[in-house]
Each structure stands twice: as C-alpha cells, then as structure tokens.
Length: 264
Image (cartoon, rainbow, N blue to C red):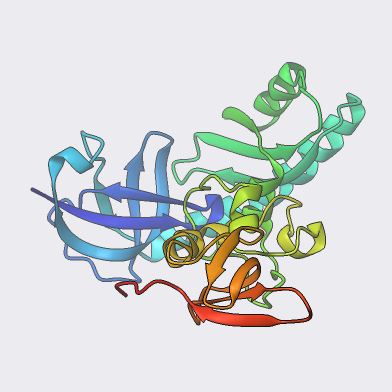
C-alpha cells in the first residue's frame, strides 16, 4: 500500500495520482507537483489515502509544496503568457493557411512546455508553426489535435438536462457509448434528443444502461408473442419500472400483466 493524493489540473482537465511526499494536505489545497509534462499546479480533490501498488502507475511523482505567494505571482504571469500565445498561434496558423481552430493553451509551472489544443477536420502539417512558436517563446512547444468530445470537455456548457456538461464537470475519461444503449432504454432515436453539445451520443446514455438491461430480463421483448389466460397476443409495450407489459389480443383488447418476479 502507498500514500496517494489525487490532484486535478483544471486548465487541462486532467487528474493525477501523486505522492503527498510526507506533506500534510487537505482537499482544496493548491499544490505544485511533478508530472511527465513538467511541474504543474493543481488542486487536491482527494486527500492522502492508502492505495494498492498494483492499481498505480509507478513510480509516483511527488507533490513539492503547497502553493505560496511567490508561486501565485508566477501562475498569474504564466496565464498572461498563455493568453498571448493563443492569439499568436491563431495568427501564425492563419498566415500559414492552416485550417486549425485553437481551443486553448497551457504553460507548465516551470515555464518549459507550452501546449496548444486545436480542432481540425483534417490532418495538419504544423511543423513550421511549431518552429515559429518555439523561436518566439524560447520553450518546448506541443500541439495536440483533439476531437469534438475533448473540445466540449475543455470549453464546457449546458447539456439538454440543464446541468453543466458531465465531461466538463466530473468525467475524467470518455467511455464507449453506442446507439444500442439508446435503443435499450427505449429512447427516440432523434439526434437532437440523444446527442450532446459535441454532436456525439450523450455520455449519460451509459449511466443507466446496465439497470435497464437488468430490469428488462423479467419482461418479454416488444413484438414477441406470449400466451395468456385470454389467448395468445403480441407484446406492444413494456414498463421496466412498473415491471409490467401490455399485450394486444385483438378486437381492441389490450391486457397488462406483471413480469416475472425479480430480486431488486
């Protein structure tokens, strides 16, 4: 078992599992910590706890210190550099005739790596752009082409439910979502209803899919023929929450029966 803290870096929408390095930390503390990118600034979202070594990618990077007043000045200066670099990247890419829509930029705390995220419908040869930015800012430049789901995660917004986007609020990874999930939950296959702000299927389709699958086990499929005390009929609808299904027996006769008993 190892001591671990979970740190969130809001600017790049990523979470990191790092060693507290014997520093007493509380949820909400802002810290400087090591990472594969360099030194980053993030907020502690889960204080020190014990985790099995097999569940971690070792070796763990360390928290160096809690953010102090001197660090805050550096952070604010870096934010100004990020803002300016994003404008420069947009301008230079336009001069090169590159079809790139820049989303954001991020400068590591140690001022060594400047990361740009962009969206494009095609593969981009941005080598000249990288050279130009590297010459201008005298640091390592990294350009990341992201998809529309990652774009929504970075920008944020409101979903059809009226709440902030899950990807921008708490999701750390995009799980696979398929149209079969919408069918399984008997949703209308209307893109405006089952697609999110990114234009892809709603991430939340996966939240209740397993529950629907379990509940439907005790019910016949819509369209199947079943035998009832009143004769053989066709299943026209099911209610997974009431555990009932309706059968059309013909002659305008529809009966509702309960499904098999299930363990809840």
